[in-house]
Length: 167
Image (cartoon, rainbow, N blue to C red; front, side, top):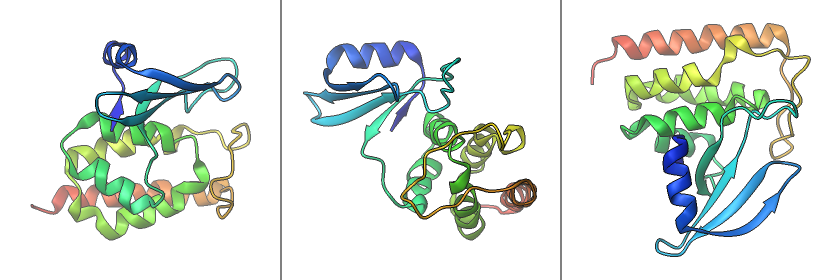
């Protein structure tokens, strides 16, 4: 689903045909003729000065947070957990829903994948006032420092619970 390695990205992009490019959002959409899949290349953490990591992923991403987490955290593909964590680290308004789903389904996810996802989500390193984010589906509100601290605590609890659950 996600490709993080730049060499793999370049190899795959050479096989695909560019459909459209948005220079303001730094997004490029591609079509792979052999698999008939649409791909999106983008910089989710771009702030205008620095681009951050470049991601390449299938398009469209499932709308449901739970479905995305199931796809990325139940398969033993580290790039999926890393890519989803990096992409969603830009949308702090999604974090309460993400933690809620993780608390409910933590035993279904692979330990390593869950750890990678939470590490790349970067909850403890975000600066809330300076972060600009686009509203996601118009139903999420931005979070404040108190809510952020609560979410960080809950994410640590999920990580510890998953560490002690055998499967």
